Length: 248
Ligand SMILES: Nc1ncnc2c1ncn2[C@@H]1O[C@H](COP(=O)(O)OP(=O)(O)O)[C@@H](O)[C@H]1O
Ligand SMILES: [Mg+2]
Image 1 (spheres, rainbow, N blue to C red):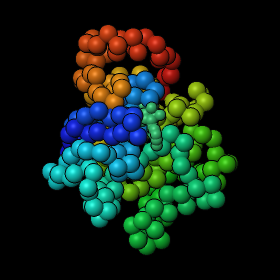
Image 2 (tube, rainbow, N blue to C red):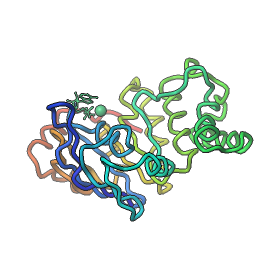
Image 3 (cartoon, protein in one colour):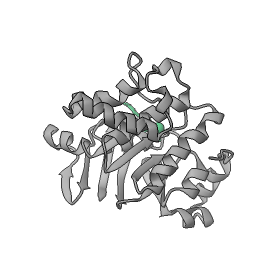
Image 4 (cartoon, protein in one colour):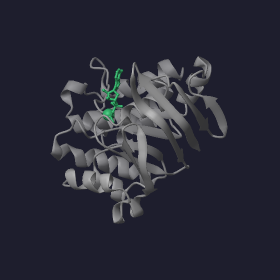
C-alpha cells in the first residue's frame, strides 16, 4: 500500500535520513523504535511532506512519486488519504474538541457543516469522549487531548495514520487510555505507522517493527521475531535500556 525507497534528508551538513526504505501493507501496524535523534520524526514528516526529502520515491496505492519534486497538487491529494497524530496533540486552543475535529473536514475538505459535525461526533464517541465534545483543550487531560487528536485523524477516514510518539508527552497514568484506543483501531484493521517507546504496544499490537539508528533502519522484523530474538546487539541493548512498565 505504501512503499518508500531510498529516502534521504539532510539539514545543512547533518545527514538525518540516510537511505531509508520500507514497505507497509494494508492492515499493517508498524512500530518504529529507536533512540532519540535517530531520524524517526523526520522520516514521518517526510512521508507526509511536512518536510521535503532530498531524494526518495514514495509509492502509494501503486502510484509512485519523487519525494523531492512532488507537486503541491499531488501532496494535497496524498494528504487526503493519510492522517497524522502528533506528540503534542497540535489542537487549536481556542476550539472545542468537536470544533478541533470538524475544522479539517469543513475547511480542508469542504464538507457541509452538518455532515462534519455528525462525523466528528462519531469519531469522538469512538475514542470515548462523547461527554467531552464541548470542552476546550485546557479543560481536558493530556490523554483526552490526544484522543481528540486521534478522533481528528480517524474522522478524515484515512488509509493510513502516522503516529509520532503519541504517548510521550503524557503522564504515565494517562498512557493506557490512548494505547487502548490505538489498539482498538489496529484490531479494526487500520493501517498505522507508529513511532513509539512503548515496547508492550510494539510487542502486542504491531505486526512489524523497524529499529532506526543514525538515519538508517538497522533492523526490520515481524513483531514476534523482533522481540523473541533481535539480531543486532545494538537493538538488544536498546530494549534493555527502556522500561516496559505500561500496561494498557
Ligand atoms: N528542522 C531541523 N533542522 C535541523 N536539524 C534538525 C531538524 N529537525 C531535526 N533535526 C535533527 O535531525 C536529527 C533527527 O531528529 P528527529 O527526526 O527529530 O529524531 P527522532 O525523532 O528519532 O528523535 C536530530 O539530530 C535533530 O537534531
Ligand atoms: Mg521524534
